[in-house]
Amino acid sequence: MITSLKIERFRGIKEGRLDNLSRINLLVGSNNSGKSSILEAINLLYSLTNKEGAFGEDIIENLARKRVRRPAYYPSLWYKYDDKSPIDYEIKFDNGLELKADFNKERKWRIKEPSLKDSKKSTDILQGFDELFTRSNEIQYLSEALKSVIIDAEMVKNFAIIEKEILPAILQKRVDKKLIEMLNEAYETEIESLSYVPFSGENYALLLMLKDYSVRIDEFGDGVKHALAILSIILGMDVPLLLLEEPEMHQHPKAFGYLAKSLSSLTSKSATQIFITTHSLGLIDAFLDIFKEEDISLYHLSLKAGKLDARKIEVPDTKVLEDLGIDIRSLESYII
Image (cartoon, rainbow, N blue to C red; front, side, top):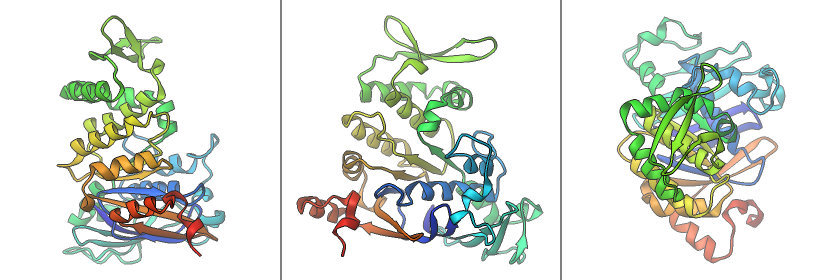
């Protein structure tokens, strides 16, 4: 689990850090405060040890074109498009491992201070994907610990990824029963089972089998699809880092509690660390209510001239601020 993250020269962030991270981390703040950049910076770390992401995508290319529908423009990963200097990272993990690494315009990683126990020095070695990764227990740890998936509106729109990559494993392991139970409780649906049928030649489509008829998943509301994507990935994949961008989209407020409860029951015994960006007070309240204080952290982010200010708000203080009429999403408005 990541306990501290420092970033320099990534997206809109010239420099910034988050300390004392927990298993569940809520990121709030106004638009253009760096929330999405934090998720994407964590996702970029996955490429340190893997060329391909959880769904077989090129991690770096995917991030470089994530915000636009045109060919990848790699300088967009850099602060003010200035790729003359590398993107810098400093990361601490809960097992004591500390890592300093950078990512250059040739799209290669360099480990500067790995503090790798029982391994040869790798300071200032441009590695890419060389044999060093097979010689170190710490590198193996990083390969597993940094595996991440971003779930955002774009993924929900392109639900074929979930249909193809995740749901077959769900059905094979028969955890579809748990998935259906959670969806029915949260959305008062009457889904009895999941099934695949041939669609458009050799492709298959997912059907939700209801009591009297069946509905293709595309025809269900975005709220159900968003929840289905999140829960399916947790049930069907081993992903240590789950990155959720505004999961409140298309959700009725009462669904927030069900989502928090579902994530709690599904990840409480695993090492899954979750980062959530949100603009919803209802979602914040639901997660703070469900998760124990030692398992969750709330950060208010603001970004001025590229400097990220990440203020950790202690859980008991959120109630005090609410009673004072202070909106934690716009905390910078109350600070002189």
